[in-house]
Length: 129
Image (cartoon, rainbow, N blue to C red; front, side, top):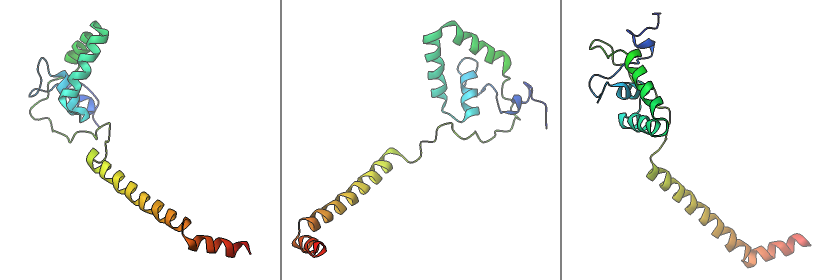
C-alpha cells in the first residue's frame, strides 16, 4: 500500500481536473472524485461563497495548493458510488403508487359491497344465534 501524498491523489483519486476545470479545476476534480456532476460542486462552492465570502476563497486556494493536477497516466478509477441514491425515477415511483392505490381502492370497494350486502347480514344473524 502506497503512502498517501499529493502525487498519488492521497490514495483517494483526489486531483484537480485538467479537462473540465474553469479556473484551477478544484470543483471539477472534487466532483469527479465523489461521482457527482460538476455543476453541483460549482453551485455548492458559489453558495458557500455567498454565505461565507472569504472562507470559500481560502478553501479554494487550499484546494489549488493541496491537490495536484490529474496526470495523464493517472488511472481513471470508476467514481465512488454517489452519496445519494435516488433509487427509481420519479415517474416510476408515481406509477407504482398509483397502482397500489388502485389495488387498495378495489379491495375497499369489495369490502363495502360485502358489508352492505344481504349475505353479510345473514352471516351476522347466524353468528349471533
